[in-house]
Each structure stands twice: as structure tokens, then as C-alpha cells.
Length: 603
Image (cartoon, rainbow, N blue to C red; front, side):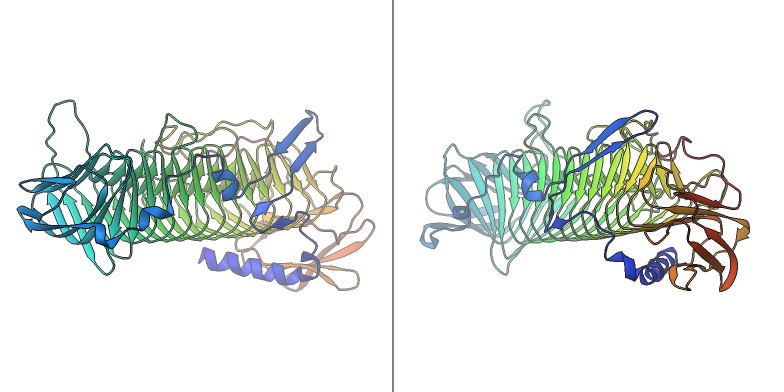
């Protein structure tokens, strides 16, 4: 119901503001790359220059990482060179060179092309070669099980390509207990385990069941070019140490740990996940997608459920986020449905969204970055969150954003939230606060916030040059629809904010655009229509808050000095006012202003 009400509010006000909305954006975004440097100087009692680094596209971010091992020649071969290997339950039949058979284990000792057909009840494909050429394993309808170790184990190779033969179904599964040669050994640890660069390619399907630990794991790089992958694991679904690159395919992952994870804490240019396309259905106990450095998404269709979803949050030390990149998350497009018990989209540093459609439900933050969030475009609908969008600095240049939150809608708060298995503990820890260097910049877009706490909770300052901001704010008096510590300079765009009167705030007197704050003599019920007209009867706004309110803050380029305006509630005139200064107040209320500590994650 909240989602529908908020959408209705947005549509009503967008209709009412149609005449002026075309001029609300002062920032031009070309394609997926923001070409505008957002540098803002804030003058107050403690002057601070706040600089927001320009956002980059996924291609720009990817250029900072080492390239992957992908080579077009990896997926081409001479059919006449294929060596046929037949799996017969407890035995293996084959002839030729480059391999050795010992009972139900076949060891590949030389680079080449090997095609496997049949079933192994308790056996293994072992790759162990020093050749500098590629080993290709064609799975042509296989069912391989091993009760005590990895059914497919790449112990040594330069590169291995697993080919899923067209129109074939392939299965690989391991047992719940591995037997190692020594007590110190802990590898292999996945049903498909590779010490070398691994590529998965083809139009067949592969079902992997990791009963011991992970489903698919590469201690080097992992590239998934195509195929239908169904992975179930008691720990992580798919791991790549240096990187995971997904170019396409259909991936379904059920993991008690993380879904897709890349972890390399030794090389700052590694440990990334790059997704160019594909369909992803990931259900994870931990993070659905997690990278030690960058998560880079160009396109794709994502359905992500982490930690049991938004209704399952419990205080815990593990991370259960939808998408997490410790260094950065950059998204150029795609369709996302995220249901998470932890942050839906998270970075310990920066999040950049250039495009995409997002439907987010989170028991914690919808979008969180410790340092900077930049939104250049996209359709973002956060239907459930504790705090909707949170970072030390947030820049919104364009897009259509809707936020429903049980606490603050948009929160500027410094430091980290101590959450995440990579680079921190977990759960809703307290953020670190302070106003120095913290800024919300709005240059364009349409932003609708429905918050039970503060609508805009800014432990710093606000700079608004364009866009439309609608806030249905709190009903209790210790929160405000707008709450900031520094200053709120508005020079363009439109903001309408309703809520309680105890801490109601409006843009600062240092603004170049006029604003008015109206304190109503009594609390107005939810669903009360507010309409403001000029003396000629022309409508400036028509806004219907979804919850009760006693204050209204309104700023628009249409408010002129010396002009008189009429205020109507449900069609009946309530009062009128004249803009006598940059900041005009009607009625009495407020008195607290900004500065209250806030934000963070609920304890």
C-alpha cells in the first residue's frame, strides 16, 4: 500500500509541476557517463570546500583493473582433434594420448580437447598439466559424482575451458565430507575446483551441487560466457579469486554462503566482478554478489534474495547484502529485484548508478556507501528500508527515485556502518557522525520520499540546483521532513516537504531561490490535499501527503518576492501569504532546526 500511495503522490505532483519541470535539471548526463564535475563551495560559520569526484562508467572503472584471461580462441577448436572419453559408472573407457585412467579417475596430462559422455558414480576428472596451451573439457551429457573430493579438479594448467555441449544436461555433485592426503590440506574445496584460469562456455546446462563447501571455485580467474548454470552449495555458490566475468548465460544459485564472490586481498587490481549481461536468480545466506574490490554491472536481469530477505533481519556478524563491492559498485544498466536482510546495494567507498531499473526491499539500507553515492539516472524504487539512501556524500543528477523508509529517507552520515564480511563486521552497527565535508547535492531528477523518521537527514549541508523533491515526512515531533546541520542552499528546482512541526526546517536564507514554511494550527489528516495558487488563480503545486502533517516547506522558482499566494486544504482556502524575503514563515512552530544526531543503523 505504501508503494502505491507514494507512486500516486509522485504522479500528482509531477502533473502539477509539468510546466516547470522541463527546466529542473542543471546537469547534463550523456549516455552512461556523467561528464559534469560537481564542485560546491559551502559558506557558513565553518567554511568547507566539498568536492564530489565525477562518476565514471563501468568501462572506466573496469580499466583500472587487470584484464581477464578471455580469448576468442578459447571457444574454437578442431573437431578432428577431439578425444572421446566414456564414463561407465565405475569405469572409464578411452583411447589416445594426453591422459591416464586409473579406475574411476581420468587424469588429463596434456593440453588438448577432451569430450566426456556418461556417468561416474564415484570418480573424478583430474587436470594436471604443465603445458602452456588450453585444456578443453567438453561435457556432453555427464553425471559425475564423487563422495570424498572434487568430481572435477583442475590441479595444474595454464587455462581450462569447460564446454557445455549444445542441448545437453550435465550434473556434477560431491559428498559432504572430503578426505585429504594430509591433515593440513584444505583443497580442493568445491565440486568444480580450479587452480587455473577457468572459462565456462556453451549452450548446454550444468547443474552443480556442492555438498561439502562451494559449488564452483577458481583460485585464479573465472569467465562465464554462456550456458545455463544451476548451482547449489552449502557455502558459496560461485567463487573466483582474481575475478568473475559474466558475459551472458542463465545463472540460478542457491547458496548458504555468498552467491557470486570474488576475493583477492593481495592485489588491488583483482578481486572484482564484471557482469556484461545474463539472467541471475540468486538466493544466498550471505551476500548475493560480493567483490573484494569492484562490482561492475553493464546489463542483466537480476533477482537477488540475501539473508532470508527484508523480513528476516537478525543481529548477526555476517554480511547479507544484495550487491557489495568493497571499493566500488558501478551500474550502467540492468533490471534488479533485490530483497535483502542487509543493505541492498553497498560499498565501503563509492556507489555509482548511471542507469537501470531497481525494485528494492531491505531490512537495512536500500543503497549505502561509506564515502559517495552518485546517481546519474535510473528508475529506483525502494519499497522497504530502514534508511533508504545513505552515504557521507550523495549527488543526484537525474533519475526517478522513490523511497519508503522506517527511519530516514535520505541520510548523509559519515563513516562506515561496520557491516560486511569483507572489510568489516556485520549487522546494523552505529555510523560515525559529524558534519564536516558531508553534502547532499541535487541537480536533477524526481525524488519522492516517504519516511517515518527524517525525510532528508543531512549531517552536513544541502545544495540543490534542480529537480523535484517530494517528502512525506514524520509524524512524531523529534524528527523533521528536512533536517540538516549546515546550510541548505537552493538555486533551482522544486521541493515540497510535509511532516511534523517540532523540528521542521526549510532552505537557508543564503539561497538564491525563495521558499515558504507553513505551520498549520492543527495536525492535518493523511490524504489532505494541499494546493497553492498565485493571485491569478494559477496552480503552483497540488500535493496530497500520505500521512498526517502540521508543516509544509515549499520552494520553487515560481515564488516571487512581493507576490501573494493562497493556500487551500481539500479545496477550501486555509490562508494566504506574501513572499517578504528569501525565507518566509507562516504560522509558528519548529524551533529545533538541524543538528540532532541521527542516521546509522538501528541497534
